[in-house]
Image 1 (cartoon, rainbow, N blue to C red):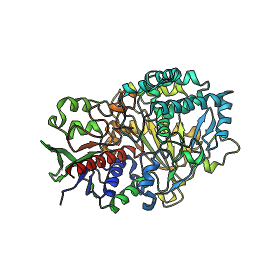
Image 2: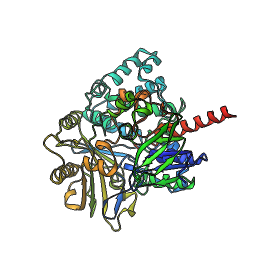
Image 3: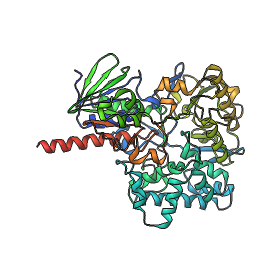
Image 4: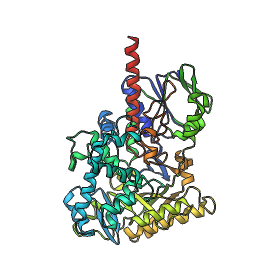
Length: 537
């Protein structure tokens, strides 16, 4: 009964995407998940009694190709189109990320005369660089060393050096004038990473959207609604039912294609023999056999705990298992009896529309540098960086009454504090500091809170399976991306162990809720099956 064509280890969103594509292709597929619920950080979690929502707050990143090809709308996935898509406060005044570029440009020029032109030229230059590098998010990546050789224009060589070898701080300081515009891009590039913007290669996060645009072709749309059809461009939208609605739709899609979904079954070993992979065994000793196995878990956990030296050799195993995680996520969920007004909104903004979009907290490049640098030394920041949503505005059924939920991801809370482990007092203290900072945007917030949940990095690791509370399964710097993610011998989703594949945030193109690694891994499996069938024919 436990014989399948493919076994997928890990039921996070990428594992479910892989399983759905393979099940749709007619293969017998099983997903084996250690937790009692599917979806990992994107799945539903009861942060408060009777209040379930996802950990993640990244509504703009889901790959539209995954939504379209898996027909997720047929499985209940709906989006609300937010406009503006983001709000971020600077010195008591709010910047709004309108879909209308002219409204954005007026705000940029209010930061500093001519800033809109400088901002647009930087984005355009990055897009041109992305097109020249010919890197696709939808294909196995090239090695980092190959990229510079693809460039012929001297100016692009200079920009390549600034992005891939220089720092985010250096790039932004030379291209922009205002602290506000620099902070907008810094939070976009570094939101979940414990990497200061002064770190060499830290600007590479700004290349993911240009790569996505370039992959869509030279005639790809560059603004407005059409841009949302390109992965990582614009905002896909806010899922009705919170971010966990993505996992609900993927789960229903898998069941439609007869994928077996097994939860509460931690895999403890990948089985293999002379011919290649043979399947997996769980903590209870139950075996699931298959000629093809896909791992969608953190590669460090995979190589350290589930594989032995004989699978691919001790060298590869030791190198991947030794990858530093350096996570820093902290979760804040607030239930409030009413929503405070945002401070500093422009007169022409509809307060209700603004509250429905994502908010970000982080006001300067220097402040971001200090926050991350302190966390690296084990100190929790006094000015935590945050991304958040009020999901009850687009998903009113998340609470039974008229209360609202505010879901916040705070970054740069050290996994290992310098002066002792996380405990209830330390967790409460940092959580309340986050609420204090949020109150700059939402005055009177603390007085409206009727219940709350603060989850420290160690709890996040335990409850959601995120090693060291790292949502991207490792830093996303140039040396950890492209053909080195998670290792040069294991890049491109295939591995030296016949029939064994890797997927998830620890593979190209990295973390966030895109579904792209899962889609790419499924493509690799189906290509290999096709070639095998042709050889046999």
